[in-house]
Amino acid sequence: MTLTLRALPAFTDNYIWLLHDGRHALVVDPGDAAPVREALASLDLQLGAILATHHHGDHVGGIANLLRHHPGTPVFGPAAETIPGRSVSLSGGEHLQLEHPGITLAVLATPGHTRGHLGYYGAGYLFCGDTLFGCGCGRLFEGSPAQMLASLASLARLPDDTLVCCAHEYTLDNLAFALTVDPENAALSARLQATREVRRRGVPSLPSTLGLEKATNPFLRCDTAALRASAVRRGAPSQPQAVEVFAVIRNAKDTFKVGPSDSGPA
Ligand code: FE
Ligand code: ZN
Image (cartoon, rainbow, N blue to C red; front, side, top):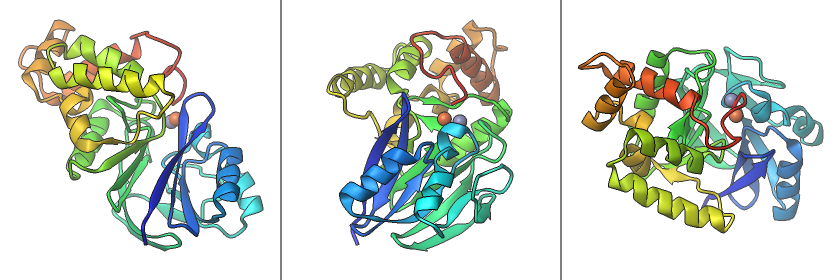
């Protein structure tokens, strides 16, 4: 059965991803129940599964309410974290065979933003929570640069046409930062123009594709000469390892200011 993807906007810049087959839906990271319940009602869908990538409130805050209205819905989430209503504890490496909607999802351990962070990959979709963003990556709240770099590298091994479903609309701010560390990258300036255009129309910049992220996202490009040089200019040792490049660039992003987003516990 054909699957249809919807981005449900929540709070100021979250997306709750809804994937459905016309009858049943799964939702990823329902930080708020209201947009999910409205979408289920207006599309006449049953809730079949709730997936959580990590424990932050903007990702799990709506689960209890959804369970009250859709009792018995399985809730998948990281074993290493506190997830309200979790019924299936995961640590990465599992394959979930869901029937409603019908999809097989590979569970990917992607620690770094939080210590138990998970990604879910199946049918060409990657639900990566706060690990990988459009042209960026999540902050390191509970993990090390080496952990996050390894998590991003494992995502980068997925096919280039993978649809990257991130949990926040941060792409435009991330592009502004990316251009400061990878200024000669023509794919990056092209992406900025294209993203400005879709955002001007109020359209989500996501999902992106993994191929586009690999061409433009500085955190997936720590092994390139351009990013190495940029990290050295910012204090990395000469001939830096990829993890040293990553640490310096991530640190620079933490203090880069273009707007209000990516400043909270995203
Ligand atoms: Fe978040
Ligand atoms: Zn988060």
